[in-house]
Length: 187
Image (cartoon, rainbow, N blue to C red; front, side, top):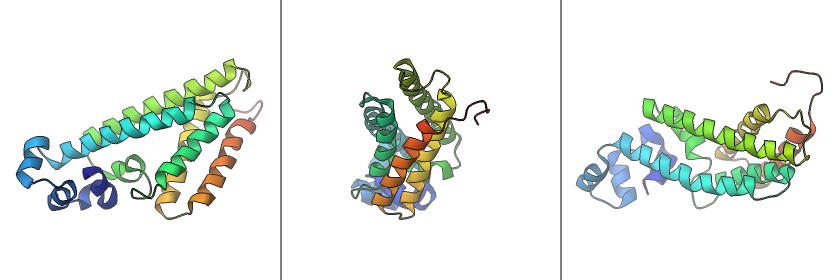
């Protein structure tokens, strides 16, 4: 698969020969179907987002308790980043930000905005269910949650053991909902 080739070698490191071999297609077929390497990479990012995004939404919106939803999302990030069937880390966190392409940058920015909004919506559901205080900073905490998730993914990429990351994910989830500064501006 092209996704695994890009994930393992990076965009710049993946050659057309690597992609042809990884996909099991001929060079003319690759060009006929995708046009160029950049178009193929964008298709991989879109498919990756769609597939992993559905699973992340299930992790976030599946649990009825907001604390468990936060924990579930962070654990999902660790589990997907340490899945033995693919390279460590995440294509969108560890590879795509290094690509110098305006379409990729725009895609990442849009995906980040959509993901942040979904997490904020789930936190607002926690406020409405009185699981979180009425003044809970949903937008700020959604960004923090995603930053923590990405940090766990990067640590997975450098080889931190899954069990350590899962323990840290659990602690991070508690930190996000329990450590609510009163009377202070939340960054």
